[in-house]
Every structure is written in C-alpha cells, then in structure tokens.
Image (cartoon, rainbow, N blue to C red):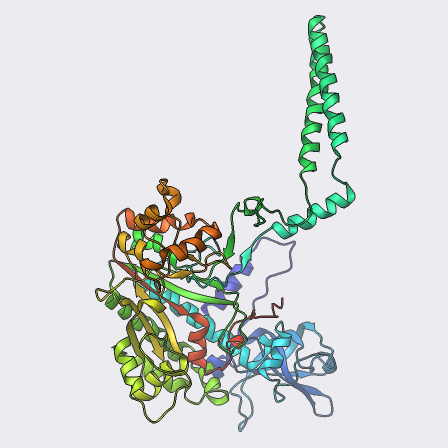
Length: 613
C-alpha cells in the first residue's frame, strides 16, 4: 500500500506533460495477500492470461491472470460490453486492465476477484501458433527448453525464478550482516583456478582473420615491385627537397615539397604493412598461435572461478565474497552439468579450516531458513509437483547441526557398508562420487555432513598442506538430494610450500603445465633469470625424481606462467592465513526445489549444442 501511494504521488508530481502518464500498477501478490480488506478498491492490474473462458452465452468471460509476482492467479471478470471477449481469452494474451476488487460469491475457491471496468492495453495471441498450452496441459521440462524465451510463463519456471531470486537476496543479506564486502571479480581471466583446462577461450583472432581475408580479396597485398616503386618515389621526392634547399627556395616551396615527401613515406609504410598481411590465424615461426596479436596480447579465457582474484581483496579487506557467472567447456550432457553457472565464493582473512566450515554451515542454514520464511507458496508448489520432501529437507538442514568427519573416517564408514554395492569402489585416495556423498548424508547420518582433510592428490594446488604431508585442509559440505553443495579449504599462505605444491594444471587448454620448486628448476634448467624461471610447474603425483621427464614436457610447451606471479605476491608481501569456499548456486536451487535437471533452474541454460538467445 505504501509503495502504491508513493507511486501515485510521484506520478502526480511529474512535470513531464509531454509524456504518457506513468502506469501505477498493483501487483497481484499484494491484492491476494490483502484479501477482502481491499474489496471495493479500484486498481490497475497487468498480466498474462493463463486460462480464459466465455460464460453466460458470450456476455462475459472469466480470465485467470498472472503477473509473475506469485504463483497464484487472480480471477478477472470482463463483460462483453467492455471489450471483445475473443481477443482476451487466449492463453498467453497480455493485458493491462482497470477494475474494482470484490469478494466472490460464497463457495468459490478465490478469496477476491477483479471486476474490470476498462481494458487499457491488450497484447493478442494467435492461439494456434502459441507454443505453451493451457495450464492444465503440461509440456515436459525438456520440451520447455526448446522455447526458453517463453518458458518463464509456466508455473514451474516462474516458481524456480522466484526461489532463485530469494536465494540471491538471502546470499547478499547473509554476507552483508556478517560484515563481508561484495567484490566483482572479472569474467575474462588469464588464469585457471581449477586447473582442469576445460576453459572457453576469449579471442578476436578469428574475426581479425575473417576481416583480413575479406580485405585481401578486395584489395590484394602489394607486390614487391609496387613497394620498390614507392621507395623510388620517396627517393625522388627526397632529392627534390634537397634541391630546393640548395637553391634556397622559399619556405613555402620547401614546406610543400616536404609534405609531399612525408606522404610518399607514409605510403611506403602502409604498403609494407599491408604486404605482411596473411590469410588465416597469425602464427609464430614454430607454428604456434601468435596470441601477442590477440586483443589482450596473450591468451585469455572465461573464468571458471573468481576465487583467485577475490583472494587479493581478502588479503586487504579481510572478509569478502564474489557472486557471479563462471564457465566450463566440459562436453558433458548429464543433468548436473552446465557450461555457464553461478558461484558464490566468500574468502576470509585470519581464518582457518574450522572458521571456514562454521561460515559454510551458517550460510547454508540461513538460505534454507530464508526460503521457508519468504518462499512458502513456491516451496509448497514444489512439494506438490516435484519433491514431497522439499520443505522437510529445508527444515532439517536449517535446524540441525552438521556432522563433521575426516575424509579418512568417511572412507572407513563407506568401506564397511554391507547393504549396498557402490558403482565406484571405495578406497582411500579416491575423489568421493555423488553416490558416496549422498549415502553419507542420506543413509548413515541422515543430516548434512562436512567431510574435511582430503588427500592432496585430488585437490587443487592452493589448498593448505597438512602436517601429515598426505592431506590438505579442504572440506566439502554434503547435503541430501545433491551430495556436494560446497567445496572449500584453508588456502596455502606459505610461499615456500605453495611453490613446492605439485598439482597438474592444464593451463593452456591442451598442454599440461606444472608447479615446480624454483631451486630445482634453476639447477635442472640452468636458468639464471629468476623472473622467467618462476614459470614452471610440476604435478603432485610425481616425485622430484620424475622432474626431468616433466621438464621436457614443460619446455616443449613453452608456456610461461607469468599470470600467476601476482598470486605468489600475496604470499611474499604480508602473507596471511585465509580460507574460503564456493557454493554452486544452481546446485543450491536443485537441493531446495527437488528439481532433477540443472538446466531447469537457470534462466538461460548453456550446455553442449545449446546456447539459445
């Protein structure tokens, strides 16, 4: 009501007499929430028709109108004398109407309805061509992906959108209340945080090559004879200037001749530059792609994580987080993978693994409680249509302390399971599969579980090496339905240990490049230039004895890791203990809603073969 009054006041105060008046529209959610308390009030409502039917032998129509503000529709009654009914009743029709809120007759399911007095705007629909059927006829979620531009009009995708919105609001609210700063990390990056190498490359080389090819077709590169003739002309013009000066010609004559000479020189430069144009992608003498000719003068990619960048702010502002899109060029068609997905990644200075786990637990519980308090109607829709235990799951996680066990203990428990045969064999050193994670949280403990201290060989280079030299201070939060929801760790703040940490990093898409200890590198390679020598890396699964074999591969790659020098600088200059984690936002939505396919919980899913819109 207050917002409505403010909008009316603002519209009245407007001095823009030459513009159409602002639309003061009341949301359907607000009308339904107030119920009969607003009966008799005149309002303007806009929305899309879910279903429409003529009644009373065509004298009036009942329309179920939805504006997306809530799952429930508002029943709208329009008389034929107000507007031609045939233009209004088709599913998908948009309309802006003015009318009076009234209480419906007793015995009807609606608590209020709208009697229309004026139809202000109508967006008609060709019912035969409209791809979304009436609400009682359901398209499969898979079919809806073929009309991704319209699927948000359906009950399911609308409910998911509101739940997603509330989870995003809760995320910002949680971190703000806890004193975190929101940092926008770059989408374009030159570093690979995960080391998987399945990254989308950002380049203008292809468009440049197409442009060059077109240019060469229209204007072929100059021949050697043309360039030589232009150089002869330069000499002639130079001689002419010299003669004028010797003859003590006027300043104007000499200046004009110099201008002609400069134009001749510019022409030679242009011809020589054009003679270097070659069709195709520019390459170096060894055949490798010349990325120095690219937009950023180096290889660049779409980010797989904002973690490395947000660490720089954590090492100055203490508690920060980033929340944005990330990308992975993984050719996977499973129901759990997307090429573009969103990550929430907090980073906390002066924090150890225990602090990290505490923050993660509080955050997940906050999200679950927020949905219960702010999205009850949409969650009830999910319970009715997709997952009967969705609300129970939120209540369990929001109110139950998480179990915390070491990776070693988790493996021991799983190996002792007798009533189930896992598809993936359980043994120390494996990366726990989803079936293992879900069994721990759904069967053994029946509550959320945090597994910590994972083998170093299956975790990333930046995770803190434990004193046992076998595990790292990493943790995963496991929840029912999805398994891993959060992955995090205490970061390695010790420069010497970080430089010796060995993890395979496929940093340049095709060539494995590795972390290597600087002193070993200097001895083996004989490089005296420290700046260029700190560019080689080695995998943790290899011992120092294998360095020579790996070194050959590294040198063959010829790929310096200068982009990571800044990351090491964080350890060189005022290094601080810090920790962080990442929550896959779409996974959180899967967990909350009970939806089965991750492609249905993001507005515009990108996956192999599909990038609609």
